[in-house]
Length: 125
Image (cartoon, rainbow, N blue to C red):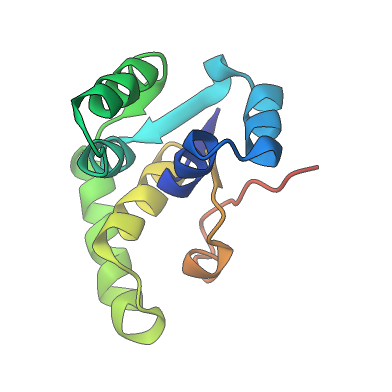
């Protein structure tokens, strides 16, 4: 299972062929998203049709909720890294989801996460 960051889906919706190919090689059944990514994608919809398309796509994926463990770890990460590395709350929640579920995070913003030693980042092979 691979947790995909919001920016991966944005690139898919922009027809980013390299990202689309990588996600296809991972396989839809191996893709997970955080509740945060769901919310960010739905928030970014430009109209009702796009909103419906995003919802339909998300319904095909494993959505990992923000539970107590994820929330607690996110708070710890924010406390430790918000000042030094500008870690945002959404990124802390996404990273915590990957860490708690012991899965890799696929993101295009490596600098936003590379300092988190417990986080495993997915790299395209």
